[in-house]
Length: 449
Image (cartoon, rainbow, N blue to C red; front, side, top):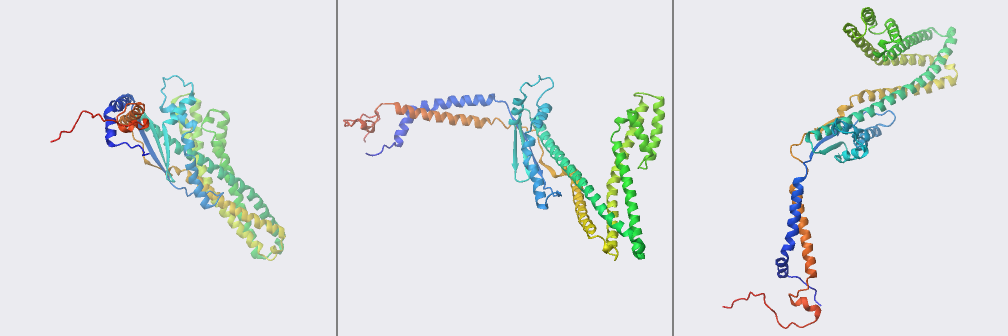
C-alpha cells in the first residue's frame, strides 16, 4: 500500500475552502493584541554599570595571592545579597516609591517583593556589575539606579572598613602581649649584665650607659603617648559634655596637660567662662563662643591623633636601637655566660615581636588605604533618564498576536479537515474498497482548439 501524499494542488484546494477559518482567529487575536498593547502603560528602563578594580591591599592574615583574590571576590560575591537585601529595598521604597500622603503598607513583604521584581542585576565579566530598574517614571527609575549603586558602594566600604579596623585592633593587642614578654626577657639580660657591672670593661659600661639612656627615652615616650591617648578619649565626649559640670572639669584638666593647643584652649575657656557668667541659654554670644570652643576641641583631637600616628615609628626606632645595644652586650665575654634559657627566650620573643610589627604595619596600611577605596569603584555607564519607553514593545506584541492567531487558525483548519467526510478524490474512498465509476469535474473544462 502506497503512503498517502498531499499535493500542492490539494493544499491550495484546502486553503480555498478553509481560508475564513484560517484568517478569522488570526484577525481576532491580532486585534485583541493590538488593543492590549495600546492599553499597556509605558515602562522605562534605566541602568548603570560599575567597574570594581582589583584590590591590591594585603591582608596580613593570609598570603599575597589569596589576599588579592579574596578581596575582589568578596565584593563580587556579596553584590546580589546587598542589592536585594530587605534593608536596601525598604530604604529604596521609602525614598522613591512611596509618597508621604500614602497610607501605611499593610503587607510590607509583598510590597518589597514587587519592588525586587523591578530590579535586574547582571555580573559582567569578573570585575563589573550592571544594575537596571524598570519603572513607569523615567526620572524615578534613574534616581533608583543611582541610589542602589551609591548604597552598594557605601555598604561595601563600611563592611571593609570595619574589617580593617578589627584587623588593626587584633594585631595591636597581640603586639602588646608579645611586647610585654619581649621586654621582660630583654630586662632579664640587662639585669644580668648590670649584676656584673663591676667587672665589665669600659667599652661595655659605655654600652650599658647608652642602653639606660634609650630606656629612659622609651619610658618618657610611653608616658607622653599614654597622656595623649587618655586626653583623646576625654575629647570624644565633646561637644555634648559642654553643658555638664563634669564635662567642664574635664576641659580644665585637659588645658593643664602638655598637649597641642593647650594654651589656646586655656584662653578659650577663660573667654567661655566670662561669657557664660554674663549670659545664659541660647544667647548669640554664648552660641558663638561654644562653636569656637567646639572647633578648637576638634582641632586638638585631630592634632593628638596625628601626633600618635606620627610618633609611633619613633618608638619603634628607639626599640631597634635598644635591641642593637642588647645584642652588643650579649656578645661580651661576661654576658656570654648568661643563662642559656634567658637568652633563648629573648631570641624567640624578639623574632615574634619583629614579625608582629610588620603585620601591624601592613594592617594599618590596609586600613588607611581602605578609607580611599571608593576610588576603586568606577561608574562606567552612569544612569540616565530614558526618553523612549522600553516596555511594552507594541510591534512585537502585535506580531506575536498575529503569529498566535495564524497558529490557532492552522490548527482549526487541520481539525476541520479531519472531521470532514466529504469525498473529493479517489484517495478519499480507498478505505471503502469500492471501484470508481466516473469523475465529476469542477465545472472548468479545457477548450480544445
